Length: 343
Image (tube, rainbow, N blue to C red):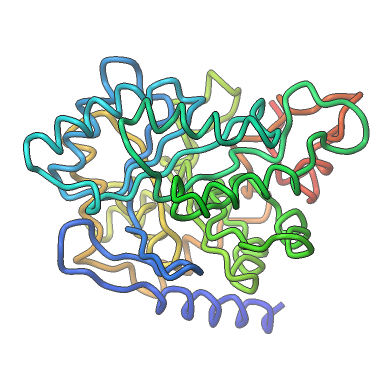
């Protein structure tokens, strides 16, 4: 166990060293496997209500953010597009100064559907290209049988065509296990540059992080605060992350908020992170994580919340189908179901 812990310590130190400090707006960046640099901290837009996300995006960019994380299924990309259009018109930023991510939803995995879905997203965002386009889930709407139809290979080839066309500068995946990611090596001409997954001290995914590093795929942390505002939607105890005594204890010690501690922890691990907020003061505070550090002891404390505390908040139970390829949580995540929260 000691040797395994030492391995993870060395690995995380190596990953953190790959982060390039940036003195300009946008903060530090990470260099992806295609050579492009992505800002480490972005604004998440999941669950941002209509009428709120436009102001949130504008507030974020004016606070220094240069990375906005979107998805078609969030239902607010048109409003994000309105915000971007106004920011460009006002001269706050230019298009090439921003990193915009979006995601392909589960009912658009067929070869012909992938470019159509991307075009819809681009039209809604009022953009000519995305910096990163992710397959949102390894799930196909309504699929039955033992295998995904269409296959991930079919979907990925269409994603590669998008990158070749220039509509997406980078392509990747979201909610992928190490097993599913590794399997793509058999056919991928362009290997995923990013795997966006749930990550926080209560669900660290150390093994997945190590596997992605070995495969050359960067990891972005979503729900880094435990997604407390989605507890009722997907039935989980999200507030436990923000209120965990280790998190609040470290926050008191460094005189920062629990949210800032969780974001800083993610950055020091070498991952990028996309916290969501629509409150200007919190948006600004969530970006104030670059001119201070957590000590080695504090990082170790946050990285030692276990064993029973290690819980996935976005459990994925809603994708299980007794007639489909994912009949159990083990099928979906390729791991022991005890690490998934079932309320």
